Structure formats: C-alpha cells, structure tokens
Length: 313
Picture 1 (tube, rainbow, N blue to C red):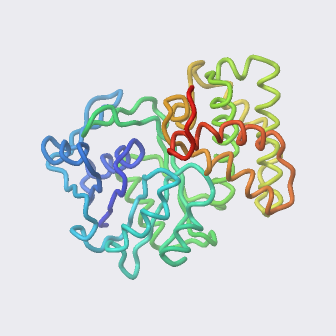
Picture 2: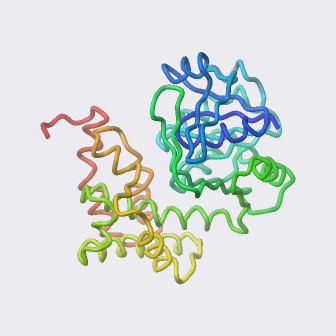
C-alpha cells in the first residue's frame, strides 16, 4: 500500500516509522526544520529497545509531489483537521481512505464533509511519543496501538488490508466491532483527565488521590457517558469504573497533551475535548455542568494563546 503520513509528529511519526521500517511504501508530510532534518539525516525514532532510522525517508511539504495514495494517516492537531483535509486532496484517489488519529470524536465527520464519506474512516491511536528535536521522535512505554473502522462499522476489504499492513509492522492493531464506541471510550478518558489536569495543573497522581478532585474527575466521566448515550453510542455500564481503574494504574506524574499545551501557553485542543463535550451536550439536551465549568475557566487562556485576548499572567 502507498501510505502518506500527513503530520509527522509524535503519533504520525511513530506509526509511519514503524511502517517504513517494515518495508511499506511510506511518504511523510512535514514542514520547517523538521522537514529539513528528515531530508538530511532521516527520521529517527528513539524507543526503549533501540533507535529506528528511516534513511533516506521520502518526505515533502507538498502533497502534490506524492500523488495519489491508498491511505492517509492524519496526524495533525484536532483544530487543523479541516484545513489539512483541503491540503491533502492531491493525494486522494477514487479508493483513498483517510484515517484520523486525533483525540476527540468529531474528526471523522469533518473529513466526510470535506472529502466525501467514502474517503473517511474513523480512527484513534494510543502512543506515548513526541518530537524531541527536528527529525527525531522519542517513544516510551510498551503500549502503542491503532484502531480504525468504516463509519457504518461494516467490514471492508480496505480496512482489513490496512490491518494486515500494521500487523506485519508489529503494531498492535484492531478493527473494533463498533468504532464509534471505541472513539467515545477514549474521549471519556482524555476529555475528563485532560480538562481536570489543565484546570488543576496537577498530574494524575494528585488528581486521583485527593477526594475532591477525584470526585470531579468522575463527574466529568459520567457527563461524557450521558452525552454518548444521548447520541446513541452505548458505552459499557462499567465505563467510568474501568477508566478510573486505568488512571489509577498510570505513573503518578502522567499528564495529557492538552494540559502540557495549556501550561506552556500554546494553542491546545480544548475545543475538541471539553469544548466538544459542551457543544455536543447542548445539541443533545444533556446537562454537563462540570465540563462547562472546566471549559469556561480554561477558555480565556486558550484565547490568549491564539492571540484573540491579551492579558498578563
């Protein structure tokens, strides 16, 4: 398969490097100093078991130079999905599918609106990977996975073929029976943990052990569960308990990308996480007071990071 990685950041870079290392036909879309470093010295992936170097790596900032591909793995930030969908159109052929890797539940519908439902699938991933320097990505931990599926959950030849490609690259891969449930399962985790971590500026070890913040974290999760149910996505009755058990297993200093971006004063995925909970809840007629409080309290800093508000901190 011809595979394009649009957005060679932590997630896109990790999975793209694994695929290229396994001999797949991979093209990387990057920009700036990251692009130049990959052109010069290859894409370098540092893992606990050693370094993977993709050199030479086929990399460009112009999708038109790549041409039509079978699959695009979309690794940009959630707020960049619509813009990226327009930019990647030169790589879209009649059978091309685009797999979004963003946290959140709105990217598949955004891609379908921009590219047509036939080109959009739903996807999510899990990896502790990030760019440490131009051309270099660090990956930690042993749990790295990708899940995807057709928007209507039907089995398809193209998703099965992609599953086998990842399997050959020794990547943990799954086509869930219900990809939308899988998206909401992860959304319940990241929106709740991310929002609480951003608001408290504390790692999970603090949030989960203080009775007050643990209770608020559980409230956030129950609200997401209620919104999912209102949108006819039935999560397991144990979804909140299972997610809390997972958070209890994390290292004490664990944080989310949302939290790290907000603390650093960078634009974040707030709108796609807590903002999305509030919007989707309003459309469904569901009350989400905890997420509203989290979102509204974080919004001024988000607008400041985007240059739409100015105030000292």
